[in-house]
Image (cartoon, rainbow, N blue to C red; front, side, top):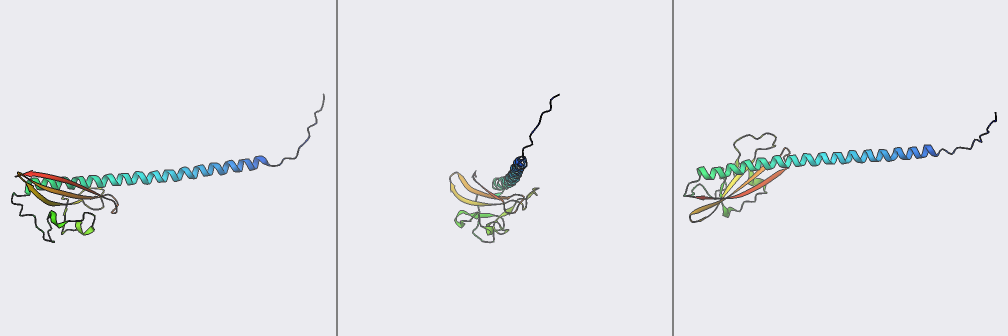
Amino acid sequence: MKKIKVKIVNQSGVVLVVSLIMLLLLTLIGVSGMQTTALEEKMASNSRDQNIAFQAAEAALRAGELFIENAVSSDKTDFTTSPTNADGLHLKTENLDYKAAATWSDAESVEYAETIPLVAANPRYYIEYINDLAPNSYFRVTARGTGRQSTSHVYLRSYYGKKF
């Protein structure tokens, strides 16, 4: 039997260096994936919050339109320029700023009558009398809905015509 002689070559430890580099790359990929997932979670949460605020504003907008249909009389004496008009009825000439916090106070707007779950604050609306163009009267209804966070707001506006 022949003996084979194997020369032992000095090893330089390249496998250790390569495996550490691979481990570093896998760690970077994992951390990046976690950051992406966290961002997507925030985006989904904000989208849900905006949708809740939109639905709340839509409910208040429909309540304002229903109020016009059922409660506004043909002489429109309900509309006044009084700054303490707690029923949310205004003349167009008042130029309310729908983004101002004071506009959504109890003195200027009406709170939606029913409690809506998942919102930070119940939606509110106000109605402006625009003008008469025979045989119709025209109104503008503006509503604000709030999502789960008190900082998320959705504003909706509709124009409503009523024949008296």
